[in-house]
Length: 241
Image (cartoon, rainbow, N blue to C red):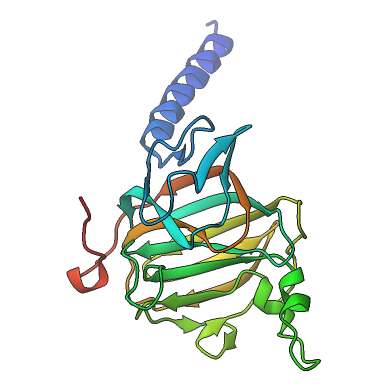
């Protein structure tokens, strides 16, 4: 009796391909938070109309005034990819995760979990009496602000410092990959995980890009949303109009 293995094998491959396609459609998918053309999906909170602009596929932040631009919706558990570069020596900026996107009473920044972005020259420019701040301060520190608390993996006071300095200098692109799940955040800088923080007291809220005194560029901002966890109202930032 003839055995039609080639036909059977082809049928198996087709079945497996269709099944895989079905699984792929049900998996979480990466999607852009910036379309490379305009600021759709972002809301200016408390900066000037020209603080944020788009040029050559980048978000350009001029750094003045101090304040933030927020996502148009909240996020809980996610993977975040963002590329950034400072254009001024000692530049300061960052991304706020799980933020209420409401400026504080004593400053112009909201609460949340800050993912620090500082130019390496910040250390030299802020040296006082011959004493340099720790180099880790420029390299992806993680810390709660505005009343948000957390437990640092690598303590520098209440902040968590990176265990290896991987940040590049002015004019060079840096890549941050962020894993944010159930109040825990892990940060990879330029291809290596080097910092983390846990038990963040607010674990659902807005993403904010920070304007803090110096020109910074952002590009290729992507997010992959993960399933939600058990998050109470007290652990969630209020919804904004």
